[in-house]
Image 1 (spheres, helix red, strand yellow):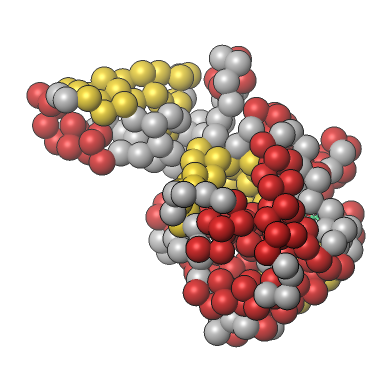
Image 2 (cartoon, helix red, strand yellow):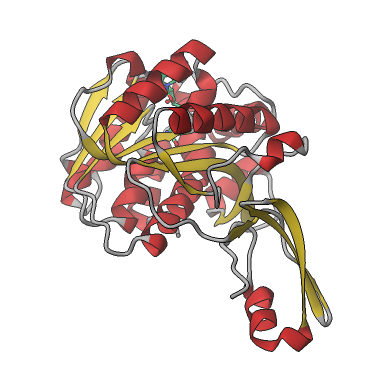
Length: 322
Ligand SMILES: C[S@@+](CC[C@H](N)C(=O)[O-])C[C@H]1O[C@@H](n2cnc3c(N)ncnc32)[C@H](O)[C@@H]1O
């Protein structure tokens, strides 16, 4: 899913006054923070906020778009009317959700950082989507989460910024108020995966069901294999994004972990591809997560239809051999 042109133009307008060298330095600091385990994104300067909008917002937008698409493909008939974005930053997940779920009429965004809120409101004013322009922005802590049921609640790249106790409290509150689905997205690092895993256990323990990425609700086999469940989403870099990063490539791959939890049970998929498929001449090797653990499956040319499907398969896709 591409970063919307109107959002790109609005981001460029918000950052236009910031000298390029300052933005580039802040973008480099953000990249280092995101490669580490503790990205501190406190927007203590306009420059840091500008760097977030230019280099991080497109990446989290791409990850959120991918996760929302997973829902839309699986439940094409689901038409959410309301969404609550917790730790909304500049409203990234709202923009992605509006592309995938045009049925959403009411967006509420809770964000503690005043500068993020005002940048997000400014970007939203530039949208051609009425629900984005009319979104309700609330500056405050997750602990003051609105106490009303919302079809879709999203926590995108925020859990890692909370203490363990605050994570548990926010997840419990989000669970209690999610009308249908609760979506958690985190950077795709081993440390952030532990946070997602703890959220999975908490939500299962509270009676929620896991729709994705897990094709089961039994113990996560990744954890015992000393591995971490994460995926990768390619996104285009704008020319400004490329310049700020001093990058040659016109794209980057955003690594992320996620969880889609549902109030109601749905039929499980039979497996999910949890690594890049290895595509050789005549056979494809798939690393799968299944209800009976992690498995490798080799699909050969002689399996004709399945082989054609395997050649098109991507890391993160659901997989069945029927
Ligand atoms: C990494 S940013 C992610 C922003 C946005 N969700 C996205 O995907 O681009 C994390 C955001 O969570 C906000 N945040 C962190 N702790 C919070 C809290 N306790 N209450 C509300 N917002 C919080 C931060 O201010 C920051 O804007």
